[in-house]
Image (tube, rainbow, N blue to C red; front, side, top):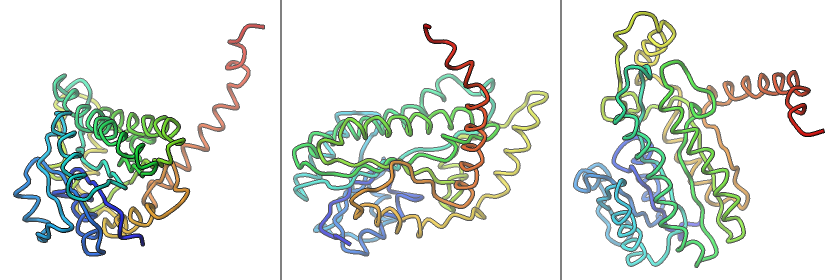
Length: 279
């Protein structure tokens, strides 16, 4: 492992972000980590080493605040090699019962904040002619489940953004991966990470059944965040990391089934698809 790399991690006070920051520090990396509550971040990380750890209070809805955190990281460590856009939260419920402002709020955090962090760090990485961006998506962005329409839309946007920005910045030696996990034991289904809207409407059986199944699985998800962190750290040393990385057996299986179904459907409707062109 190249422990001279400097990491910048958002959403670092809980979940995968916290596990990753702890593992990075244990392995000797320099880490700038952001959270809304910098005091809590310092407490949960438990290592106050100003030579290697820079806790940052960052409002991800404020581009000036993001820019300032990037500049503080540069002033402290001199460079930024790996950015992990981990900040985000889930939302479960029917679209009908989800407030308009709630929808805008989750897009602001899950999508726009990711874009703003990348926008802020790109001048640094272009100047270095190197860098690695890891955006944390979700398998739900490709294979959604009933009741997760808004959340899935945010993660689909993260995946699409990652695909295209990877093309844009390739010439500068900057690499991009969107990591798309299935269920991991990170507290994702807890009240701090999930906006849960219980359906009061008649019907929506698929949504209600899925919500019940997901909530009963809290704390029993098969994904191991420690293993996921080791995988992320290993990715940063790869010369040719994947653009998409699905994490977890469930993610792999769900994506495999959908890809096969999409391939079959695409071929079945081929003649209709190509008939739309001018002769």
